Image 1 (cartoon, rainbow, N blue to C red):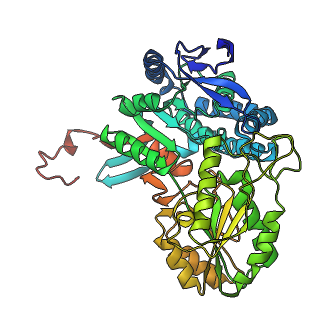
Image 2: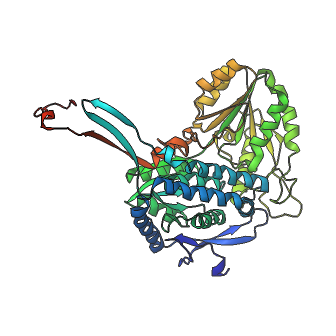
Image 3: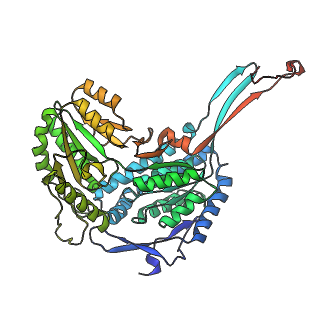
Length: 500
């Protein structure tokens, strides 16, 4: 493969060819065709990216907040203008259907729109006369150089969760996107530069663990945002905090949907199909466990029938419900877990292990797979499968459902389907999960709220986007001031800590 087909780095306002001799092939998941190569940035290139970000911070932090907001306004306009183009790039390198890819891009645009509201989001507080003639007020100020490490499954949305909010707050940012689908983040960076962002405000570097470790261990990087798996998330959090950085690390999930017998059956079935196998199940908010309460278990056969009708396909197939998994390794892991479920005694009502798509014999295909009679002890219940696999668990009461969900080590998202307000109120109040849907299967909040996973789904204190992102990417400076009118106001030394 020629040097021209390698993805470029974005350093100091320029797209440059990496000098690295190491690279990772990026393949179309439906065909295994090599689309490009991801270079593993050299140590010198990583240092240059940081130096540029550090230098840019000196001037960017002084740019008026209204001007920063206007950059975000121009950026969101460009993202909307190029929406379908970005989605097509994304679909080809991830395998997502075109409609799903468009949704990925749009959810990122929504965060950029929120970043354009940065003047209101970074207003401080003030109180007059906290003591005699003394006023106290606070300012929200940026941290410095921040960085983000993003996963393969949302190559538009998750980078857009991070760098627009951080940069709007007055920081500069180094983005290390997934090496499996780098073309989409690169296009995002091109449009950001076109929107008028000064050089050095955003850097995009490519690589793997060595490049991540550079960011984690650099003494002057202030904050790290990460989305990915549990073991990597724990490593990112532990290493980053040991190096005295702020870290928000979003990790794995095992999301439960509780189905009450009073729910609308058709609504439940339709929502479970889409929430479990959409995007080939490669969503951290996918429903992977359906908890049938009481007589709702009678709906399991109908759900199996509907899941069996779902067909995957290529990104530009308008009839495809979802695409292939990201890689042969990801496919093999899902197949191994499906086999493990059979061996451990779960009943496989729909088996997508031998899925084939006409015209794409080399694709990473896994068809919809549905297990019933799943127990807590089974591997398919305990592990995040990250594929189009749904497990059904049966309980007798809402209390049992709550006990099941709350005993799970993950707490990313959950939902309940019911027509009973008391059941919904009890569930939302008692469930130990960060994001709850009521008759909504995937309750990802809009960006004026925050994405709030709990337990082993998140390591850190402050979550992504919304008000919590502002706090994560900023410091608060508090000023207490007195302006005495004359010497008469000076009453002599104050020997206590009390304001007088």
